[in-house]
Amino acid sequence: MIKTKQLALINNVVKSFHEGETTGHDWFHIQRVVKMAKKIALAENADVVKVEIIALLHDVADYKLNNGDEKVGLEKISNLLKSINFDEHEIMEIMEDIKNISFKGGNNCAINQSFESKIVQDADRIDALGAIGIARAFAYGGSKHRELYNPAIKPQLIQTVQEYQNSKAPTLNHFYEKLLLLKDKMNTTTAKQIATQRHDFLEDFLKQFYQEWNDG
Image (cartoon, rainbow, N blue to C red; front, side, top):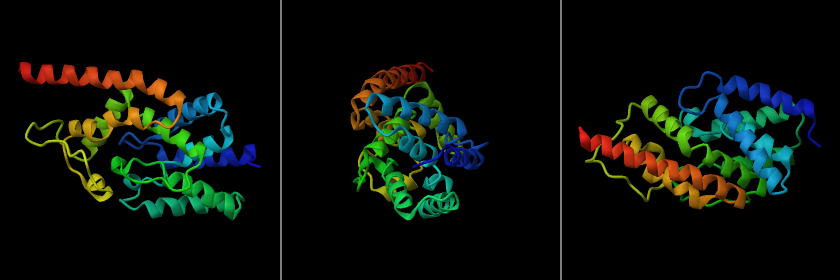
């Protein structure tokens, strides 16, 4: 059984890992995902503690925060959980769940993904929608020196994991390659309801963006 002290230790390490991060994967993102995931978990009768652990750790393994190498992040997670006395079975379960969360072009197949991992995936995807999702998209694009928009460069809707990870396309393309696809990829009924309103906000933003772009 997970103890309060273990959760507190995970929280402190993850906060230190993400604090000051400027690509939209900062500590505030983690806090929002944890809060949303727990909200969904309660509505869907899932294991709230397991959901919280996965939500706290889900971006530690993100390739974007580990020089493109997801394995480095997974090793960090494994070492952390070992240091606070999680057993091997628990560690393997958590790591498997975290590996299944990332979008990776939307074509990766989930393997042995728990219901709790699906809930965190929903919460993470919800944070990529709406006003905050837009802000995060442009923050990440800016950190990678990407153009805002270039009409000559069309979105690539079908990508391999490698193509998705190596893309240097304008940030607005990301709306079509990922953000606008998320509503229909939600796993839970609760998340689908929340995602719909935020999805509509993205569409309204794009209408306004093109109007302003063409008015100039």
